Amino acid sequence: MSRRKKQVKIIDSLNPWVGSWFFLLVHVIWFTFWLIGGWNIELLILIVSLEAIILMILLLMAQNRKSIKDDIREETDLRVDLENVRISKEILKHIERIERKLRK
Image 1 (cartoon, helix red, strand yellow):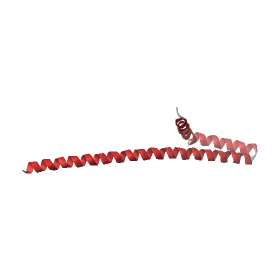
Image 2 (cartoon, rainbow, N blue to C red):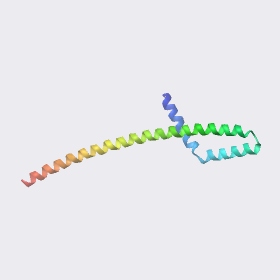
Image 3 (cartoon, one colour):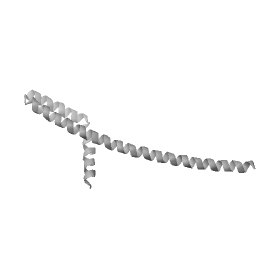
Image 4 (tube, one colour):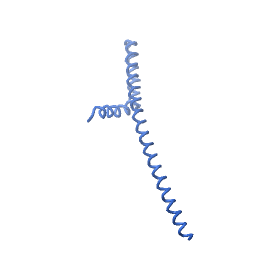
């Protein structure tokens, strides 16, 4: 498996977990214990800030992949639509020929 495919697989596997209620609950519990325990608040702020940066990067990477997929899907739809228009024009030409022959 290529390096890029491994990265994509990791991102795809993390995003559903990061966007879950469980993830939120774990963080609420963790913050609550940290604050009740009276541990260094600056350290918590640093950890949370770094986590937010990493999560935002993961989110942007996932959105970029989705955008690429959407672009490919739209391009494919356009090709199919153009082919359908071409076929419809051919059918219309055939119908017009048939009508002309029937009028004669």
